Amino acid sequence: MTTNITFQLNGREKTVQAHPMARLLDVLRQDCSLTGTKEGCGEGECGACTVIIDGRAVMSCMVPVCQVHGSKVESIEGLESMGADGQTCLHLIQEAFIKCGGAQCGICTPGMIMAAVAYLRQPESAPGGVAEALEGNLCRCTGYTRIFESVKTAIDRMKTGANQSR
Image (cartoon, rainbow, N blue to C red; front, side, top):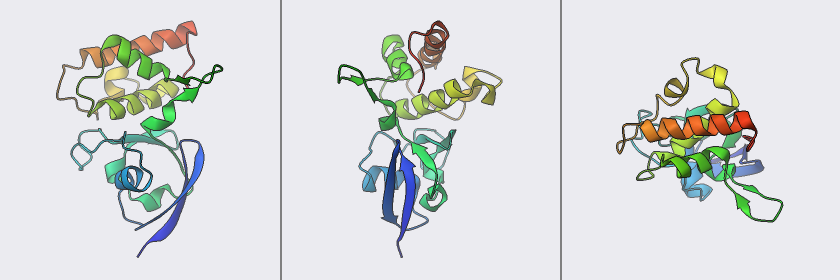
């Protein structure tokens, strides 16, 4: 049995017809055609599927879609914006990942970026800093040095006002 679930997705109202217990991850990828959110483990252990729900970084493989009814959901696709010149602009953290080499194979990158965005918006949510903010996100390619460097670069750019986090 399916039902209509309405939520705000990347700033726009979205209604999907889905089984209430379908995973948000599957609804985003299959019903909304947003394939940036990746499935790593499907058990809430790796963080590859991290999205932001009502301001909190959450692993979408663990969220039944019925729980987002009336909520604000942000996926990696929602981070881009349109510049004054009509060109697509990357989010500050996306730029930092490119500049610092924080993206490796790409499986964990969207989840890392979404967890980092949630942290940049509310750094007090992880008093232990960047490492604590990203601790639920696993990368099998690196020792995390470039990932942490990417987030710290974005923080430095925010402090200097080079680009504002959305």
